[in-house]
Length: 111
Length: 113
Image (cartoon, rainbow over all chains, first blue to last red; front, side, top):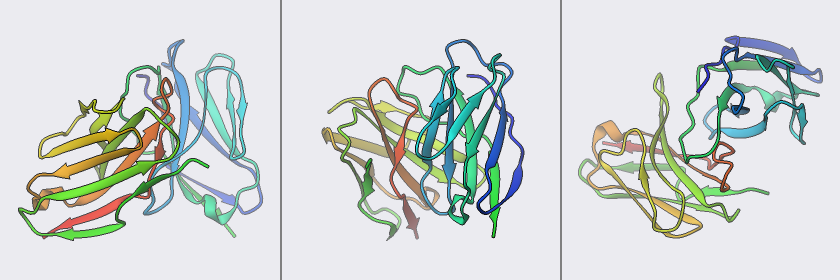
């Protein structure tokens, strides 16, 4: 599976949009981009995933560049409860495999 | 709303005890997973199951076993607990064909003394 690169940490003001970037320049054509987050002392939480089209759900939007080498997770109106470590992973699907998280981005929402 | 529950939030056991960790999901998901998470080591897969009575070893199955008698329930068993099994244990489930869309329980922090 392709490797991803994310900034170590980011700050965002409460109420503003939080934009979290992810580079996955070696992604292959059948690999999806997935985003998870983990709030301190809680289990990871699935956020969203996509293949090549932009996706939106009740939690976030996922913007994937046309060449699919990078993506951005957007939390439209960040709240203090969005403070967490956010993980971007790529995976081709199929097979019951376990998740493997990199170091992720520690997003801190400032009041 | 998707829900995965785990039997205990915190658990303290003695070395050599047999430990049962229960996980229940209410989404009718085919796939279920047990992970442990340790600082600096990240998330590691212990066992997973893609159907009732089916199980597959993950990356670190030694010292653990699992049971899946019903679709909604996946149990992790520590046959003889040891101090190096002190960890956060996380259960997850996912629908068939969307293996990486996993929904996690709150975790059980197990301490073995």
